[in-house]
Image (cartoon, rainbow, N blue to C red; front, side, top):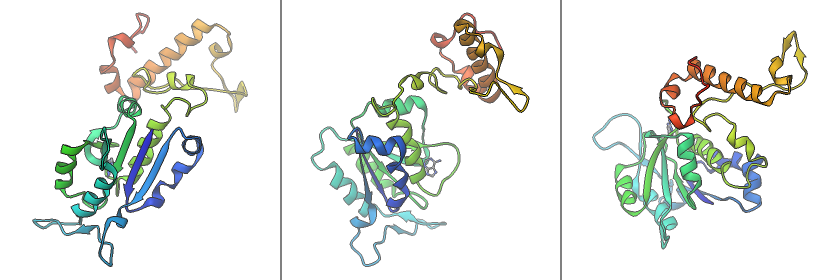
Amino acid sequence: MRIDVVTIFPEYLAPLELSLIGKARRTGLLDLRVHDLRTFTHDRHRTVDDAPAGGGAGMVMRPEPWGEALDSLLEGAQPAPVVLVPSPSGTPFTQAFAHQLAAQPWLVFACGRYEGIDERVFEEYGERARLVPVSLGDYVLNGGEVAVLAIVEAVARLLPGVIGNAESLVEESHADGLLEYPVYTRPASWRGRDVPAVLGSGHHAQVTRWRRDQQLRRTSERRPDLIERLDPVDTDPQDRAT
Ligand code: ADE
């Protein structure tokens, strides 16, 4: 998969050189390129922002550097990439969304700062590419870079070969619409707290049932909204109301 990130803070993306994502880049599973938006400016101050039309607080990113940056990426590109613009007013990013993105050959991230990017950039590239504003959650960050770190990590780990043990993708939170069950390891007793006996019982079916009950209880407590949205296909006749 190819991923391009356009930002005024290329250094913000340095963590993508680490750990499994860094390894995926070095082994060629992920071709990730970071571009400095300021290289697409032509004035002495490398200006990317200006006062909002109509007045008001803050600054807005000017359309010209974005136009040049995105043109340089899209030129002759067939098919066009999915262009993702992190924004608190975007579509919420979810595990299902991550799976959709992981199936794409090429993603471009346009990181806004300040009060956002001039709306005409969205109009222009909405016509020339598949442009999707995407939100990490209902809170405001200073810019899109942290959202890109999160989204790239969530997407890249779904690519075949990036995670050594693919089974861990099956049993994690959100894989089946529920939160993950609690996990334990050695020692069997720590500060008077014991690993639940069922986990040492050797009864595979009982362990599976216990984990499922824990998932349902945890999800009901922390995320009742997920229980309401649970697909009937993902429920089990033995699931009790918790
Ligand atoms: N940029 C600023 N806030 C954001 C958010 N919540 N999600 C994605 N990008 C953002």
